[in-house]
Image 1 (cartoon, helix red, strand yellow):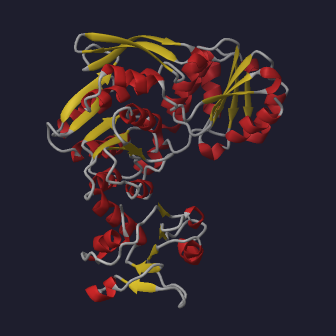
Image 2: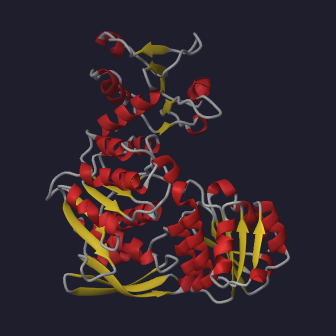
Image 3: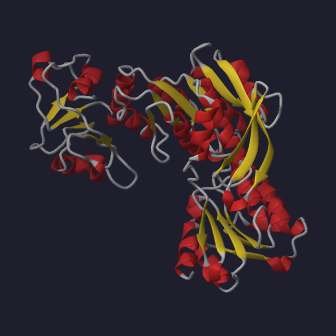
Length: 473
């Protein structure tokens, strides 16, 4: 178990024999602190964690990592300078540990603790589908191995270290989603987590405003496969259907295992049949053997998610029986959920976030369902130079799938314009500025047999549309 002694050893190089206090968990929100926990005080956009150190101790925190002065009555030991071993031996909780940077100290402790645990780690990155892939890979591996994963979307320089501090000696596999916003971020996460397997889902123009270019995104995602150990210990699981992903073959020393919809892949799928809300059915092929599977994930694109999870299962030595069992019992439909709307209409709530590839996948699912198909699509943010082209691509696909289109936001006007250019009657297209206006429009138009897809970037508050329409159901 992680103890205060391990924390001090990571930060000072000395492990006090007497600091046996078990660190039960780690949190950056004082409201989530549990007795025996480690609180990391981080400055935020609106609040500063240092203002809540006292609250964390009141909730039972054993220690806090801080990088600024605290009130005089709060116990602090300054680790920015050498501390005599006998002073470290005398420390008793609760105690604040003053460091140069509380974020870097969190990462340092996580890196140190990860190296104490013999666990095989799977890193997952890509532009779309990381979270669902992470969940499904973990569920497949859990059939045989004691597995830990990062909860929710805690996939960054804060969330991933917090997850690693929950490792125990009993864990055999760790499945870690790795997000990318700036160059060097995934390399940092890999340095902390030390993955042996790297899974890359796809590459698209997501977070272009922050990344700067598609080339920067490719380089950033490539940091995962570059960080893997050489074959045979390291394995890069790559999407054979994505040329930009397959370019990573030249950037890794790891063994390459490919998946996709082509027989040229090591593991491939065909006979894909979307079953609407009943999931998706397909056949998996590997080394001359075919296995037929149905998984309770929505949309034909979910076959790729299942391929990734099956690929990791095969790499980790699971039998087909174990892999299929994990796939069929998955609860990994994190993003898109179906709920009842006004008059019994069906609402497809996919409001978590949006990028051209994920909107196209959601529209593909909409095309599989019976009823009058309505697409409610909001602005896709952070696309940078790809902004207009990405929205117009979505508009062209919406015209093929939807019988009525409602666009929300200034950028989504490109969706409406391209849908009209692609043949959708102007009378079937409604343009509104915000979610509240969309609610007013939809309340008067949705009928019993309608299937309504609602999707847009989080900043567009598309979830308010679903909530309001659910209330009137």
